[in-house]
Length: 332
Image 1 (cartoon, rainbow, N blue to C red):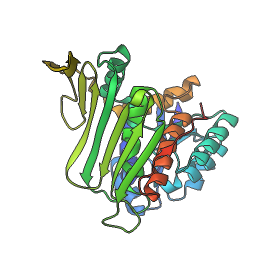
Image 2: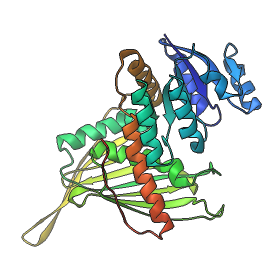
Image 3: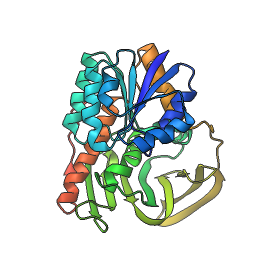
């Protein structure tokens, strides 16, 4: 049995709490938040949980084996570092940290203390995303040409990080995961319409090997919630729409050129069945199994580092009016 505490029950923390509470191998011992109103709200659903305002009390409790860090992004590194140093296994919500150096420090302390460090890249546990990855690896889509991703909605506006650090970790983690490679270069442009210096709309461009390109559009200012990714291959194309019941559609369509002429292929559409299990539940169960079985998580510290490295480069590009930033890959 793994004794666990959830640090932060604001926006996403209650979802993590719900899923860990359902797992048989877990005893959720406490929830922590400095907002008393949030603690009281959670207590209505989970009356047996211990309510704690100071996370230091959790970290100093030797009976708690693991913590989930669902606090504001600017606190991820600090709290995760303290938790790992206290001998706790740690699941950190995305992003793992706000710099590559911070990620590397977390990886080092986790390895030094033989603790599980995992980042909440939930979509890598999504059945639809894993199906996409398998189809790409099998060559079903042919050679990948480009990926176009949109993650848009009206709010929730953050004050501590811009929309790119808030939303784009999802898209970046998906793209790196399904392509199984890291970008060679990144550029980004954005605008701050609501708060000075905090971009609420950002456009990111990634360049991979063999001229594979990806474009990511994230925004807090769009009237319609959109969670859609299009993958265009030389043989087939796929659309992943997380807002639809049928999340994946594979189109047997494309354009071939022969003897100077264009041949438009228009075949059928395949809509595969997708495992309906909640990805967050799969993620939470995976974290616990990694603790119990001493395994390395799918979304380990290095996975968090890869995504943060891209975000870090994109942030530099934002500050330099969209200048392309080359990436050096020196980590695992």
